[in-house]
Image 1 (tube, one colour):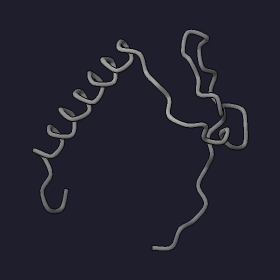
Image 2 (cartoon, one colour):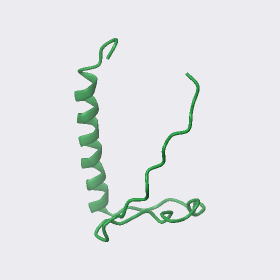
Image 3 (tube, one colour):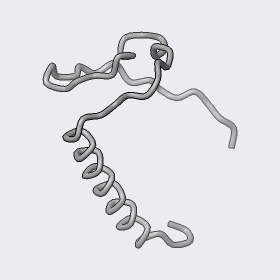
Length: 68
């Protein structure tokens, strides 16, 4: 099946309470300037998010079978 152009949805407004990446509104991200050091709270939140993602993948994997 050949690729064909899709429809690009309109830009959505992000609430001010959500921190957006530095590249939002730009054509490309800024050049890499080295590692980004995270604080302990951010690392813990990342671990929790990773755990949730792993559980979701495991749940989905349990339902995978040929033809689905």
